[in-house]
Image (cartoon, rainbow, N blue to C red):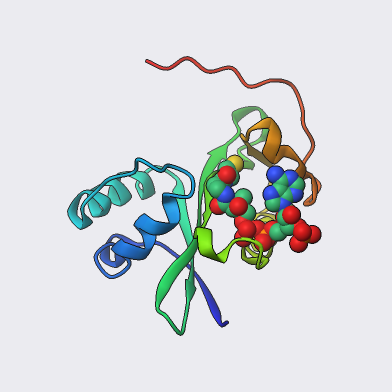
Length: 147
Ligand SMILES: CC(C)(COP(=O)(O)OP(=O)(O)OC[C@H]1O[C@@H](n2cnc3c(N)ncnc32)[C@H](O)[C@@H]1OP(=O)(O)O)[C@@H](O)C(=O)NCCC(=O)NCCS
C-alpha cells in the first residue's frame, strides 16, 4: 500500500470528505459534518498555528489516518516551539497495519526538523502503552473543565 503524507487543506475537504468522516469516527463516533462545515472548521483550525496531517492510500485515494498538530511558541523558552498532537485516528479497518506507528514516527521526525523541543499529547490510561512505544512518558496529570 503506497501512502502519501500531506497536510489537510480546505480545498481537500470535499475530495476526502467520506474517508475523513470514516477515519475520525474511530475517535469520535458521533462526528457529523458536511463538506462545507468541514471546510470552514479546517479554515479556523489552520489559521491558529495548527496543522492537520493526513495519510492517503494512494491507490484508493482515501484518507486512512489523521492527526492534528498545534504549535505553541514558548515565551519562557526564547520563542522555541512545543508541539501538541491531538485527534490521532487510523481508519478502523486499517488498524494494526503499522500506519499509525509510521506516521507518529514521521510526526516526531518533522517536529525535530522544525526545532521543536518537546511534544505533548493527551490520551486515556489504556492508550498510554501505545505512546510509550515512541518514548513518550506519563508526566503529571491532565485537568479539564468543560464549559
Ligand atoms: C490508536 C490508533 C491510532 C493506532 O493506529 P494503528 O494504525 O492501528 O496503529 P499501529 O498499527 O501502528 O499499531 C500497532 C501496534 O500498536 C499496538 N497497540 C495498539 N493499541 C495499543 C495500546 N493501547 N497499548 C499498547 N499497544 C497498543 C498494537 O498491539 C500493535 O502492536 P503489535 O503489532 O506489536 O501487535 C488506532 O487504533 C485508532 O485510531 N484508535 C481509535 C482512536 C484513538 O484511540 N486514537 C488515539 C487518541 S489518543
